[in-house]
Figure 1 (cartoon, rainbow, N blue to C red):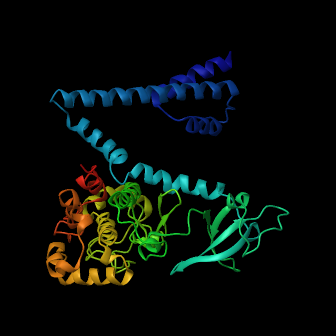
Figure 2: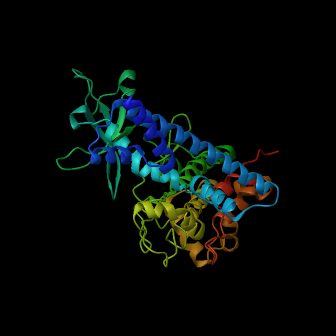
Figure 3: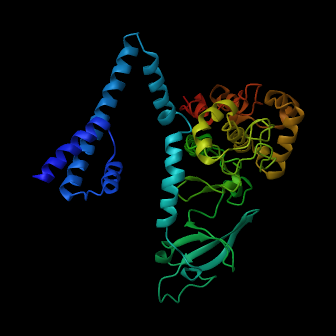
Length: 399
């Protein structure tokens, strides 16, 4: 009887004062009254019902806000509520998803990832290297498997266990990821895989896949900053994989961002050389940077850094005379001399360049290239984003 009365009192207190279960339990302990289990259970039921009521009230309030806007008589509070919801959940980069990823999903992934040891792999030949490390072909070693050697050809079953990893040395860090290919677009343009196909549809397919990959990165607030043929793997299925994120900057959390310094390849970098204007402040703590990231993205448009590199990539694939590394470097230098004006560069080069693939279909390729390779204007705009490039008529079927 006492327990029942206590439960009724607790229910009244929770409803009238809206205190949490933890606070109520603390008050009981401080008063010296032992909280019966039935009392605690009923408190939990009350709070759960209150939470459901709160959720229903919130949805009802938002519905009223939308209806008032549709009727042409919105309230200031309703507009502010909808703007906050839009800002947190629907802007790019998305502050809510970025916080969730940085503070929850990433630590969870780190704690649940496979814990590899160097003895789990057999190193084979070196695939490449750069400023941040080296990549080797590797093979996961099954227990008791003595058939793997650095030079032996792989069996079909062994190829299924293909992996790539960093060199194993004491005190070093290394990564393991799925082996996709050992051929890059750079190899294809240099002629190492045979003559580069003079096929417009193949060029379109490669360019579209690069743009789609960058679009997904930009949606997350990440700017790659090093888009070039050597960082684009081509699989046997014709798929394009973007690799080498050593220079990438996360404009959502501020990771790897310095407004005065940028890691870039001068052959593919835009004239501004930085993802954000020089007067842009350094990134604050990740949670503050995340909440402010949509404003930073709107102001500086850091994604246009990558879209310029895609424009250089288009020129390199579509113009035979620009396919070698040396010639694309000369192209970028000449573009700077022409003030970033691609049409002026074309007049300068004249008949020495074959623009056939760019001039097909009403010069669709040329129009796309000129809009991707434009210098930024004073508002940090002026060139197409990757999303705008994907919507360009260049990707429409030819008739």
